Length: 330
Image: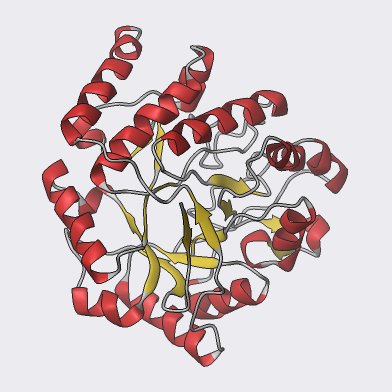
């Protein structure tokens, strides 16, 4: 089944503080989706109830979470560690890892995993990618990220490749300031760009893509997440999946111009902007979108949004069984 963003949705994904949002506020802003963090989760039962309540407000939202494995695991406080993508790849069980992750997310009602990381690793330790990547070999990254998404899809959960066009050459971490892409266009075409071209060849071109906050010298010094160069490059590759910005509250984006940046991204062809925490920032972005004529989504589709029917008990059992041998190796 394909989930279509209709005009009842505004082209924004939002986060919130606490264990539940202001429900009247959610109804008012009509977001295309909601992203959940550890701060929103007290227990698995509470999370299930939160997701059910979100679906009473909107029966067909994106409900997303960053579940990469390794150090990015929003359920670690409840379920314990899940091995990183690099570790499961080395063990030859990447698709199974995606299936187990998809089983857990499906049991909770979550239909989008903001994973896997498809950036190449060039050894920079200060760009926010440490422990999250598969290495510097494009072939390995293509193979293993596609396998992880295939596993997610088996349970009706969508993945999301990130962070296009790539953060591997960048310094510093875009959570704290705006990084600059550190290679020329030819190198990008042959390496990080090649990852996405080959993912299309593997049938992954309908999967969502998250755009990086980084300045690209060979794209007229524009910030990728706000630039038509990024969306045009993906469409030139025949990528049809939804495009979305990384969190506009990251410090790579000037906090005084977040509303303006959101509009710039939408004008550049980005399908969704993301604001992950503060209600005041969401309200500012929504106001800017309305004033600029971006009050509704354009009808993009998300494949694999009909999640499987999985019991939480079964999901917890599969999670524990999968993780046990990795814990024994620590």
